[in-house]
Image (tube, rainbow, N blue to C red):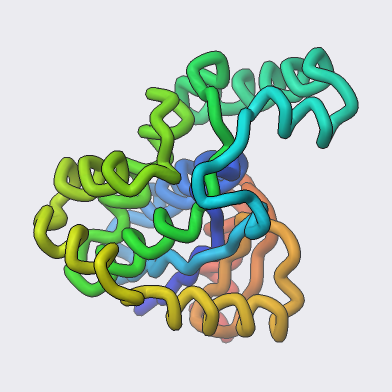
Length: 211
């Protein structure tokens, strides 16, 4: 049975990283029962952030009312991430980036058959290593570390490549009513919102087979 899974996400969303791990566990549990193809689509949580990004501490303090509250929320996500094998290091993260260029790199990776590797590298770079994934030079490095050719990433940044895809995805997200991520669309028929447990993914997989 073929399963085409679209994952709508943003690489600065910790729940999207958790959702990726849980989807992977579900696919692994299913074994050879399904032929699964995963496609990553963009969603910008903070599209108005300037290209150079902003101080994460300032941003989170404004968003949650205090830095202490932000740290409490980070600690909660860290505990959940640990259970899913993700070593979140929020203490290393200095900036909240604009992710449009990161999404362009993911788009490019889709043209070269290495989307999953690039998405994984971006999540790890931001949440584990604390790298600035809004910086184009950093994105070039991450891309070349995960199967993309350096010249291809540089050429993309010297053009408007990927921008139309991001705009089109944004329009589709509005049509679908997607206002939070991660959001999963399975075989263009079944929707799942949030970082669901692996068992929930497996239940949906079975529903697709039975439909």
